[in-house]
Length: 184
Image: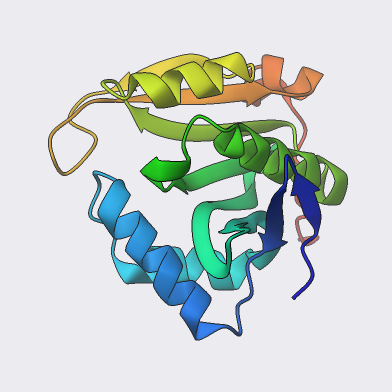
């Protein structure tokens, strides 16, 4: 498979839904390096429903070895905004500090804007995850809410939002629906 981009010598790929080994590697990365014990069905759902927003990075020394992954989606939010959502972002600890996470987030957001004209991007991260907070805030995300005991490990989370359009700055009650409703 040909990479969609090469950034700083690292190949970035769209997730290949047909490749069972890719799914196995992504599952392993998530279970080993995220504190939340996600069910395999959660990321299977993301990967199969929104594969265009799921990307991997492979080790150039071992081209079949996945060292990073982002799993995202796009959906209407309350029928008035298009919202991108970053569900999972994992980088193998041996490859952290090389800008891989930033590049994956930028790539995902760039394509969300281009393909679905999103108004904002949202995610949650643990309040104790200083590295994730630093990453997302450096990309323009702002903390919008603290979610108490959000994770199964009882840690709190911050909901972070990256506003992209004027719609993301307006109260939902004042925005027209983006979803076509059938005539009555």
